Amino acid sequence: MWPLILFTIYFLGISSACEFTPSSAQETGIVCRVTKPAALVLNEKTSEVIQAAFRHASFPNITGEKAVRFLGKVTYGLTNIQVSNLSIESSEVDLKQDDVVEIMIKNVSASFKGTLNYGYGTWFVQVEHSIDFEIFSSIDLQVNTKLTCGNNRVAADTSDCYLTFHQLILHLQGNKEPGWFKQLFTDIISFTLKLVLKGQICKEINYVANLLGGFIQDRADFLSYEDIGVNIDITDFPVIKENYLESHHKGFLAYNNLTIPYNDSVFSPSLLTHNRMLYFWFSEQVLDSLVLGYFLDQHLALNLTGDELKDILQNDNDASHQEILREILQRHPANDITAKVWSLTAPRIKITPKGTIVTSSVAVQISTTSSSDVYFETETVTAVQASYADKKLKLHPSDPIISIRNVRSSLKVSMNEEQIEQFLQTVVSEFGIPAIVKRLETALTSLMNSKSLNLFEIINPEIIPHEGYLIVQLDFGFPHHLLVDFLKRTL
Image 1 (spheres, rainbow, N blue to C red):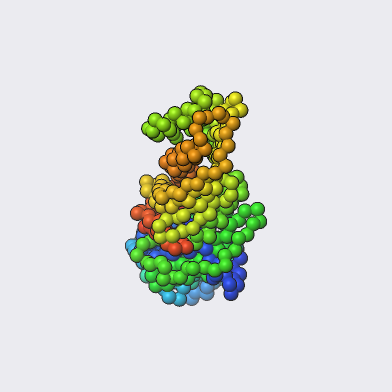
Image 2 (image 1 turned 60 degrees about the vertical axis):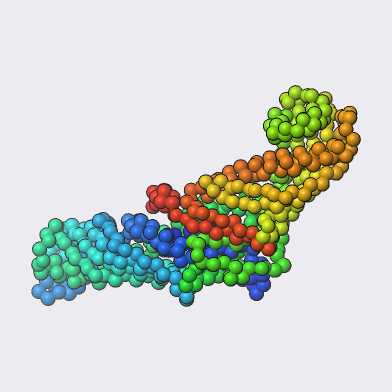
């Protein structure tokens, strides 16, 4: 359970030196909240992780000696200890107010096999033997997990780990009958064996927990692309409440040493509920600075062939528009035409209850092989609602406000300037913006899939805009195949 709760906190790729200043809370741009329903769902995978921890544990040889009446000094050693026949009856998880995730694993039944070497005797008689042994055990396991800072990231501390043994039975050489010899060694080694099992299993649980957290992180850092990223250092220690876990992050643009700090954060815990499994809160400044990074890295440009340009405009059934288009393009064949669209300035992002308001200044140039071209600039203000379904991002633009300016053409056309501007305004509004949005949907979906977001079972996601911030809330099912892939390749 503990490594899977980390799934959501590592989902943002947490990285931090764990040094917080009094003003750090004002710098929060992203918040991640994992609720109790999510913890219960993730708990279903507990048994697989527990079994992996047991199987992966490397048990040291156990040696000791004891003075026994009539036998003298008895020495013993348990070697080649291996685990088999592991089963788990049930597991429970609870979020505690003292920033602890409590996991109770009940009736873990396991058998341990290996070799027992022993010797006993006096100065004149010495007996040494080596026999196979099998130990049957029934254990309750309690792990009180705390989220800590370590190695420049948030880590799981599972050192508060307890094993309670209900049963510990030793069989020697397949002999199932009780006897004084077996009872002797059961009494001698049981206490030592319990300590060793506790130490190794709890150590392995801690290892697997942090390993799985890093595994998820590497596949889910969906805010980064090439040299563009978001600084999501935590701004405070993660909080564990009765109904949720929550972590706060900076959200600064990370691009060529450029840093854009926030003056203030509008986040309040009351803005998020705990009815859904997972919540993300994004300040509009995060999205605004991320778009700036894409602009600075020259990603906000699009080149079109003549066929692509004609495909975009083919649904314009207005005869006058088609005539104007033919006149502008001078009836050149498609392979003689190219078009380029690029942002003149970084688009600005403002989030309102109506949607994400995108303000952009764009240039368009249509060129032909005969060196004839048409150039114009357009200012657009568009409200965009976003949704996610069938593992695809959908963008829904509405109410565009279009302004055409700086129209230049080397072509001789019969239209006046007002007619051309009106035509271009219609083209941008009805065909240009939808075409750009469609390409953005494909590109952003591909980016998210490259970060393996499509591997997660996302259920009924909602993207809800508010004044100055955006909330993403969803339920999920932890993908069994992802856990299996991790366990196979890592352990």
